[in-house]
Image (cartoon, rainbow, N blue to C red):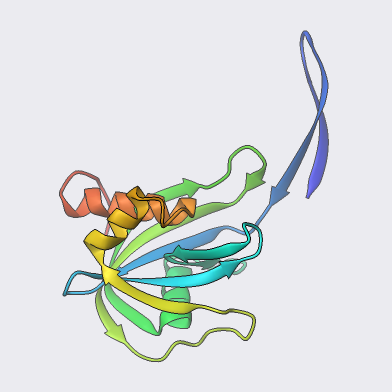
Amino acid sequence: VWVDEVSRPGVGPKRRVTMKMKEGVAVLALDAEGFAHLVRTFRYAVGKESVEVVQGGAEEGEEPLRAARRELKEELGIEAEEWTDLGLVDAITSQVYSPARIYLARGLRFGEPETEATESLQPLKVKFSEAVRMVLGGEITQGISCTLILKARLFLEGGAGGSE
């Protein structure tokens, strides 16, 4: 966290508080039957449970795809053959530096999760169309999750780019 005094011509100095977090990744795992594999977790900052895609921070020097593979394996025990990079998301641009690379993962193999002791995640499996409905209906509100689910929908319908 840092504080800067910023001034512009004709405007008095203003204090800007900014927080920098490690770069992150987010993964939407979609199986061959059309189910999205999400997580449900309690988020202290908003004081409620949140339904989200798999997410986490990249370690120092870790490539985003490698971090995405690690997070998916740790949180849900899933490995994927096919990865589509759907771009970069800046979740909160006004006060927080926290870019996240977002991925669609398909060709899934299921195993046991390897969650950290500090994580309390409940797997949630819903039809992908239901996940889209949950975003549009306000049941999924976490910004990166909303963006990833909707970009994945556009990509799968042939309307958005991605690179494999």
